[in-house]
Length: 544
Image (cartoon, rainbow, N blue to C red; front, side):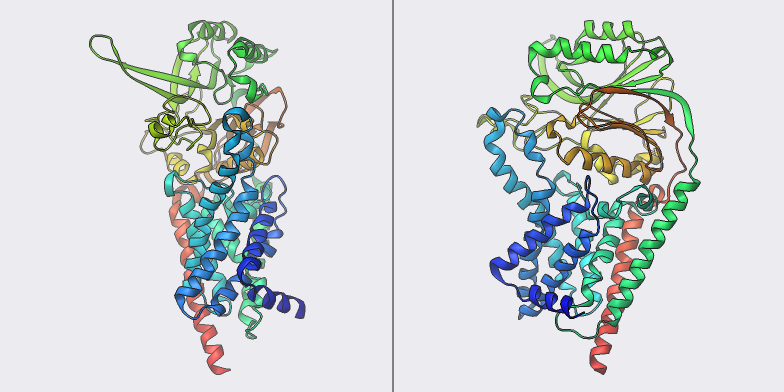
């Protein structure tokens, strides 16, 4: 007991560069909790250490302003370490064409973590405004970080990658909690759980009984939720539909993909893999995002070749760039927009349905202040002059012969607040029966990025109670059932196909029905806990 107390006092007493470095290291090691490592116990250390550092900000500030400033700086450096190590794989994309983009790596790998760290700085500032000795400060941190993570998923187009809550969803049993609460609400609970044990000590306060009790309750709840998730999995039906799928993963090197001399060979690779034995029994073939290095809808020969190999009732779903032209009454071109699209091609080689990507990647698919930055010679990663345009919908893709799909191109699947409303399909009038995610994670090589992306995609399936079909250029391609179980998959950096039946959809989950209410519920629970524990702590101190 004396060891943790001394550690708490030492960390609370850190100032200046030592405090900043310690906070950054705590943030950096937090990433071990996420895919592909899944060493979630490290969050007890990192978030617990953050509590002790914030204790130092609380005691070291003479006013709320100085306390808040100290907390903001601590949160910033924690976030910087967290995002520097958690998003290191972004640099891989700049090495695909290093002669064009390599020089930007130092700038990106400082500006991106620093920008994302501002959310943690804001979250710790909110926490400090609520800070008080005892168990109440655990609830204060959960409120602050919970609000910050929600903001990170929405502000400036949002980027909810590696939300703290994903650290609690480390396997399929623990993942079942997402069907009830969703990852934003789970983030609040994760902060409570992982911060509470260390908060028993603060290096000064001796009245820690409340924090001991809180820790016991939270650990019991965690164990209970895991048991419940295991039981839910054990009772989940292993049901499949009559729809037969073929996933095609060509494993095309991103650096070679867009060279004009490789276009024919890449297309032939897709055709050869697609028409392997057994195609006559397949209903849906799925190729990944921007599968072909040319716009398919403007390539009649390619469409004809696809029609030749597909059986009459088979539909091909694939990602492709698409250019839409607008002409005036005289036939003069007045506008030309590029879209990152998902197309459905029937057995005659006709494009029968199109979805244009709605949530584009900043700096990847478009540039803020596009014209100005292009005038300076800066291009987005895809190299499309003018960038891609935002699609107009609809969000549900009508696929001939099967239930409608909820199409999600690349990282669109990491946005629970955008995906969930479509589950009930009020606006489009057609309820999706499955999630369709096409992506090209080849930009990020063999890094942790593709594994983290796949985990988040699985969580969406559990949240919504819908099966997931995912095709990726270099992996990870997979079919996942509504309980997050992997039915079939193709490993990263592997060329191959998988034939599998589409799992049946599951019941609409509590989270799919309630959405934001679950997030408000957990924040309300934390606020109530803060009030009760704060009153209890003040009473304990007054009675001595």
